Image: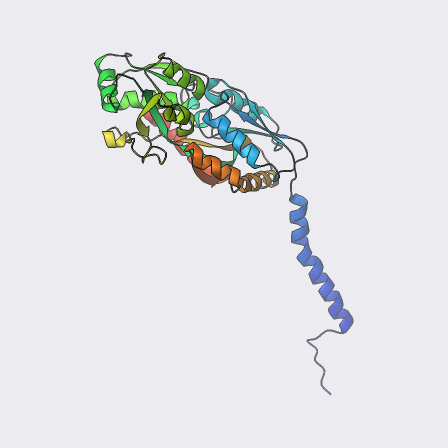
Length: 326
């Protein structure tokens, strides 16, 4: 009588199966142990005044995250220094997932090229998710003396600082856009900084400046009301919200400077916390409320995960540094 020695006795087989089951459960148990669930409100700091692009994005993603995150997401404005105040507060915060800020624009791509900062725009943060990009748009009052962008350039060249422009703050991305424009056209403009896009647009409509830079969602209300006119888009391609407005490249001035926005955390954020936040906010961008706002606002939803967002930030930072070097 032959014996099949490759097959263990029943008791042995049961023990082996239990061992295999225990081993297969280890990765799941380990993954479960590494999950992070917030237990207190998460705050998103905004480095600009209420009403601007960063503020709108923060409030919309906060609203869209209801029911996805088990805790409230609270938006707090800490305006000033072209977003650097909110960035510094975030850089100094504990990397525990409860303090984020809207970054990727001025405070991480532009300000550090103008002056020293108490944080490193390329190393002090962990990008969590990129949410949007918006073209930089140059606008004037509807009754402005400039018929088009060529007329503005001609006047700027005719007399130094005759043409004034408003921005969202000293050393901000829109200030950098003005400096890049100066360099490309060989002229000197008069820069007038404000605390945010809403203030800059109010100044423009009030005749305090000749033109101003803004994002599509920041100029939409005044544009719809017929109080301002867009002259040019500082982007590689025309803006979907402004299809009739030429790019600077089309006008013979090669400038492309999109304004990126996303959520960023302090450096040192644990990987499980990053994953939980990233996944939750990604789900928020799939909600109807977020999609409807994107469609109405004129911004472009431009998702990237943390590492990809970081790469774009570094590239933009270095590009602006090269462009504004005198």
